[in-house]
Length: 366
Picture 1 (cartoon, rainbow, N blue to C red):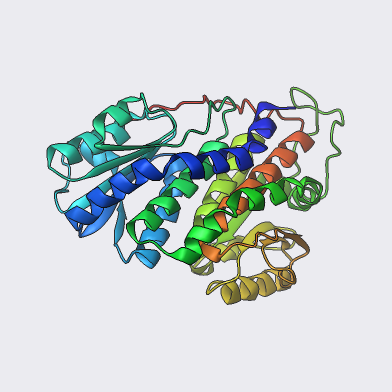
Picture 2 (cartoon, rainbow, N blue to C red; picture 1 turned 180 degrees about the horizontal axis):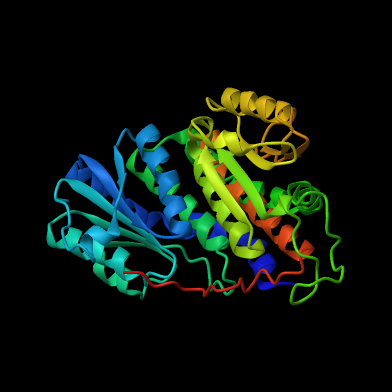
């Protein structure tokens, strides 16, 4: 079993562990933010953590009525012209806690007197040392290059922080259902393998001899490009799934919100163009269904990941993830489904998903 697959399958336990261990630190961080009464939140992140920041933007704006801006870390490092942060709460998300630019955002915010919170899987990292409050993901060591359990733990920590700031009994109960929802996704690997075959143009048998190192045939022309689309809370899911496919399969996968996709990028869609739609019950569902119908008319190969028992609209292939969760929490099990989808696509191509070409586990930027 690959390290990536093993770590994907650790996520129910990681979620349960986080739910049990984090409340004390969360209460302190939430209390500090409430005392400050921030005009908004500024979030610094890179890579998969940047997608968690996208989720946080929807989460805190919709649920906590707090405006959220994503930091431009180069303003703090390369340009050395940081914005005024005193009136804001500053949140950094970094699995390793090692990115110099993310660390510098927190350090500058603290110098200016803003409350600072770090979400990281390494409580001994430089980022943790700079932040006033540290929220430890406690996900355990992640060895494979593509992030899995640290990403979903970041999402869970963010919604737990939101809940600590503004408690709600229904959300508290739903949070306890997250580990079981993730576990249900793990049983969908065969269906996700079939969905990956559709997105790869229906070619390439697993393990067939080919021209790629490690075996497997090179991807077909169709399989070298992919659109991954979501909206609302699941825009972050679209971003993360696209990244996982790019990392593991060396396929160009572009993520967009449905609204932005209709403002121009839809022009690239023609017969056979692969599109992955991520839909959840809620205000965005109508837009997702309407787009699925339009893409089908254009002849695209449409796969829909849905949490509805009768969802999926007019997609060619539907993978049903019966999460049992409110929309706000669906990005967590949906991300797990996307990880398994990327894994199956990589294995079909004969690619080692643990060690993507040209990547290392920790990427340091400044």
